[in-house]
Length: 135
Image 1: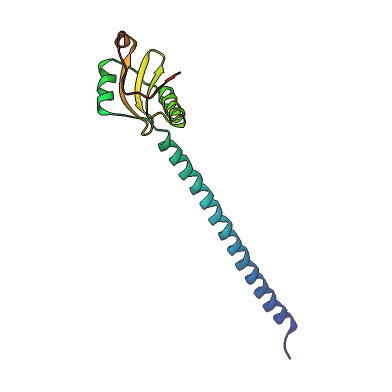
Image 2: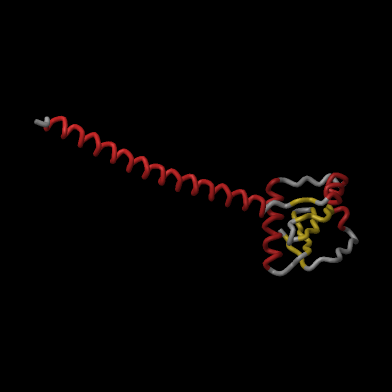
């Protein structure tokens, strides 16, 4: 004669085991979605940072040092935003004025071509630009 307690115990263990497998699978799926969401957010953030990064040509870096022009993080952000605005208007090469400095920038590549301070701007002609942005 079969013991009903042992049979019920065996069924209970099987049920617990099946539920554990289901919960584990659900948790794994949930974790995979969280990892994907986190990865997407990081990729979007990284893409945004590179997209909004302004670079300086070798010539611009030399001019910046020669003329003692300080460029803060805030200035870099302003330059990046000005490049975006210039691109929206179809401007490839822009003169961007920030405080007492002029930046000639290739808006498409977000690359500063040269930098001029207020003392150098007197009696200067800026050529090969498609537009200007004053900040």
